[in-house]
Image 1: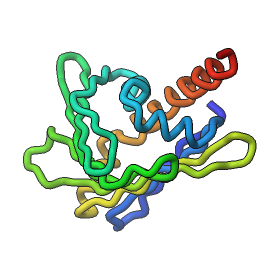
Image 2: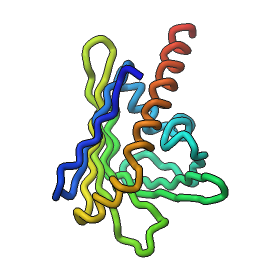
Image 3: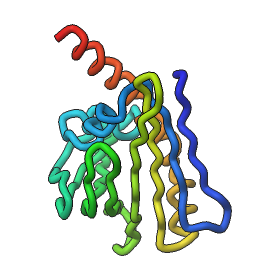
Length: 166
């Protein structure tokens, strides 16, 4: 793939940044983030199947989705604090497979328009502790994010092709 996913996790900090450019306008990338029929097609590693349990992508709305691999299910959920099309999404993110609750991540995803019908996504996650952040990085999240964005590239290409033939 021409576009590479960049994950920046500076040692000793409670945050990480994910930066990715796409060969598609930000409106399409934003739509892929907010439309459940599109979201389910690209989020997560290639070896997981995803289902959406709840999807209310508006300010104050909540979501829950499940990834499955070999009979093991991993659920993720959160609340949307702001959904401002096509500029940004701010909200929480939690994994329900941890031994205790409270490992909430606050995230902000911004969608920037670039020349030539391209866009840049910047996601910032802020964790309660450095240990939480490091645990997320060590869990293999970078592989899952990269594989997901590679799938998103293909989905965006398909969306652009379909809109040109319509």
